Length: 467
Ligand code: ASP
Ligand code: MG
Image (cartoon, rainbow, N blue to C red):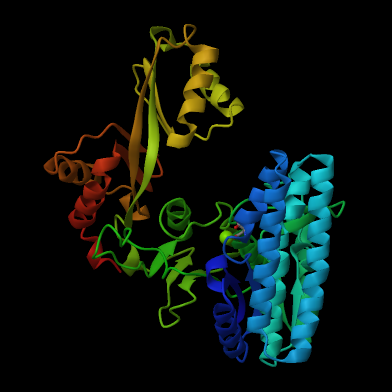
């Protein structure tokens, strides 16, 4: 099989983890052609982001302290991971070159006192640039031939939308397949840095947080992989958060569309664009735990088998949201009201998670993250209060509960089962949404009611018997 195996930061955060990853890859490579994709070591990207924030706040010493920590940690891990002394020396030499460039970049940013989206992407790319060397050398320490390549090295070409770039797939496909075919024919395992690419001018770009998942599927589509594995520290997608529902089960198989809905919630967050490169090529993906290889994980396919077409697959929640009820008589029958509200919020940089409007048109209710609530209400008050809006009513600390499953489509009685089980637990529902795809039924309750609601629905739909 041709496999793309992607490791999240939590799977490669210590020397011990990297050694066991290398051992496992060594074993897998006996029967498969493998391309490895790596995230940064756990927490490194967070630290790099904090460095740019410190530079923006003119806190040079904080930036220097953070970079010193990154350098020390990678040196330590390198020394502990690689046993062969010649290899260890070579790795440290290569890492030192990266460290010099990283320090020079930070000095430059400090001198300019300026952090641009382009310099931020360049800075944030260092996490993966370092981690791939550790993993690639660990493979070499195991006697395998291996090369480390950044997104730019492997041939991922993107637009110049720094911080949220998209690949130019045709150019990327040509370049990536050429680079990797050469390495495969040479029996060399490529270890590719996730999250980054380069635009047509050669400037480094990133796909946004969690972008290594996206790199894995881009690479998979380019080389027509048979499967893509996303390895992290969770077993796969579950019927509910096992911290809340003891009887929660691992989902053995879900469809792409279901996985896209589930990606927003739960323990394994997946970059939202991850599935795009797969859908056309219908490449199956597995979500697996690098610490529990006996477990097959969750298989994500274009057409799951008959036996797994349950109505509801899982019930998830997102805590700590704010609900804003926007009212006004002049909203009724006035074209453009919703456009004004949403463009005001967009200008303020607010992401809206849920929307509902009744046919009476006298109110629109939206849900945003608690952290965005202040900014959202402020923007709406400044721009629209007294004009199209009469009144804003705000409720904090609300939870979204979402039922996901493509089998809900056309199934009669799902909503009645949901709300009667909620009613039995005397929980008040503040808002409900369901798109016409019927893939996701979501409603909003108080944070303090969320756990009971999740348990009640898990019981009601007997999700412990799923699969
Ligand atoms: N290292 C990047 C991040 O933490 C990309 C990734 O982990 O997928 O966001
Ligand atoms: Mg990560």
